[in-house]
Length: 195
Image 1 (cartoon, rainbow, N blue to C red):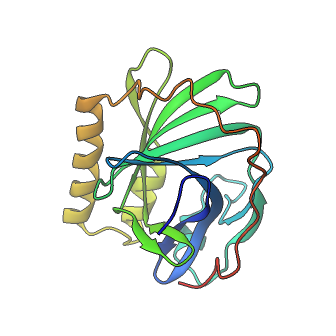
Image 2: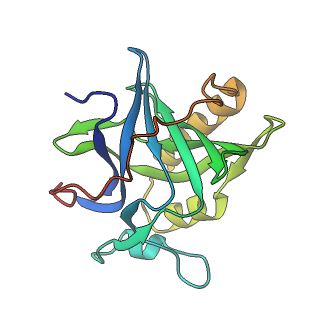
């Protein structure tokens, strides 16, 4: 359905509501994995954090996601359809390498505006040394406390993270990738909020 260069909406949906969503360019479709590019200045929506750093109470509420503009970095997210995590490369605005990031999430599903998933709160990241580290353990604990995950679901999320630790799926081979110069900053597509 989608071709490289198309604008696709990547959304995290929870309980029928968009909790995070940004338009990206489909950057890679090599028959094995898809790659999605997002850059500085891209408008989208997300839940944001409270001053104390928490956000999951709002994530599970009826509160709508808030407008937000992607700031100060480029990201290329790679995913094999069916996998329960992405492998992302982050660069600063000047394209100097920042870090790798594995977002633990439900396998993506195609939609009329792009691809949907459900974020699982717990993530893995690695700096230039490639050593994986847990990220957002507090968010994951909060999600468990709020009943977002049952004990067996929480164990499955942790197990997916452990698989990422064991695989160390970086470098990806796309660290020198850059978008074509004619790609403009995408806008939120019509219907981005329809689940």
